[in-house]
Image (cartoon, rainbow, N blue to C red; front, side, top):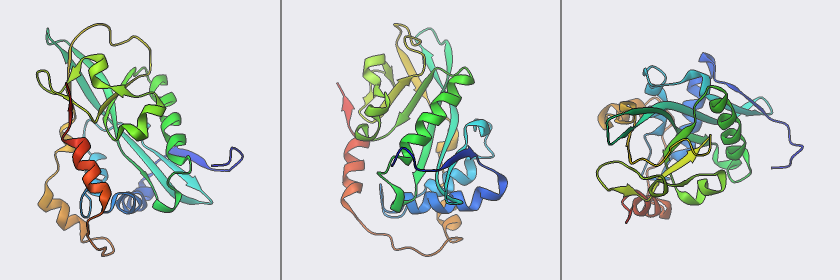
Length: 216
């Protein structure tokens, strides 16, 4: 993306919702699995108590919405059952024809700054490390954050918005229940959109490897 290129980042409005769901579907279709469920997740997330509307951003270029990022609350629990409120984001969606051009980076950096303004200091996500280590994310193992006892997923990544805020404690990550979607309901929801062919592509195997790997 040219540094002089004009685009706008703003909060999503009610009238943007269907367009955002449609661009999310196009961004993720056949990427991780045949078809996708991310557009349904976007649809249900907005009405969930863990959703943070202040951190729901779209990126517009030439009066068209080409990108979106959404955040929800999550938490870390230490060995003494003390809880720490944190963030997770996803989906991060960029229309396919605009991917790998810097728009995702722009959305991330803008949202990081806004999250810090709201006094959040940690973000935990599941994602491809190739896409996120350049944005300051590190392996969950480096912060001693697991999802169950001594299980550190390779795809679980952590970013401190305030350096050193996690201290030297062992943590367990608990994501929002909004990510537990109903596949049958999702399939029904997908019928509201233009028919697209489900098929295999190599990125699905890459996703499988990342999502089933752990760090020891």
